[in-house]
Length: 182
Length: 101
Image (tube, rainbow over all chains, first blue to last red; front, top):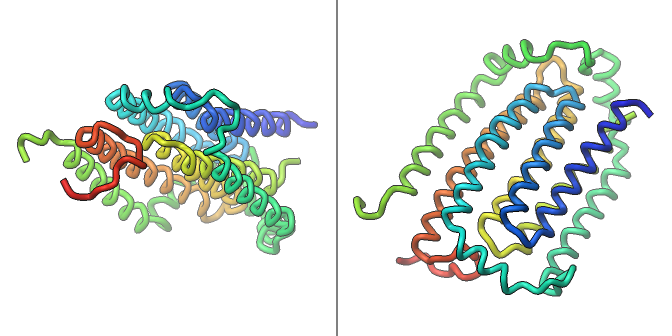
């Protein structure tokens, strides 16, 4: 078993395990911090599939931005949301969660069934990509090429998404203004 | 050897956990975390398939776009959650049941 394989399984176990903790935890703040661990493990998985720039972006945007935002919103609306939890029972599997759990498990089962039967690793376009050497190798410097592509091939989506981000930020600032001025 | 199926299975597991969180939690912020989990599962797929596209960088570029989209969604959703909290004094989606003031 190579080091890559070990790292993949380690990251996958951390990601899924901390995601399960997020789903099962009674303590909200702790579940937010475990979500942090999920995001870091996912960044590790991105590195393992040779997308280092996406991994860094994931750490900067998700861990640095989104998670802090979530924590802020959480602290600002804290007391009431904690009170909801106090009523819950301490059993491992609460009965009212059972339908949700069944739906999630059924969904996972069907997805896994599809993936095992799709034989995606034998897909024609993947073989084609391997044959024509379009696969990333660990020696490649990917960031230069990614930057050039972002500014040429994907210029339109790039601009659209920047306008969308601007609109979202203006909208968020508008939504969270003080009521008295309105 | 790590194949694409491994990545697909990890992302399916994350997606299902996100689905469970969305369905079962009674707190708008936790539901938001569930949505983020599902988005991350999708991004993991994009990145895993993007490994096979060295020329166009399709998967990685759109993974970046998806991350930015998630940031925009979260900002707006949290602003809405704070507004709702100010008005209803709760962020339990079951208890917020009217659109009018």
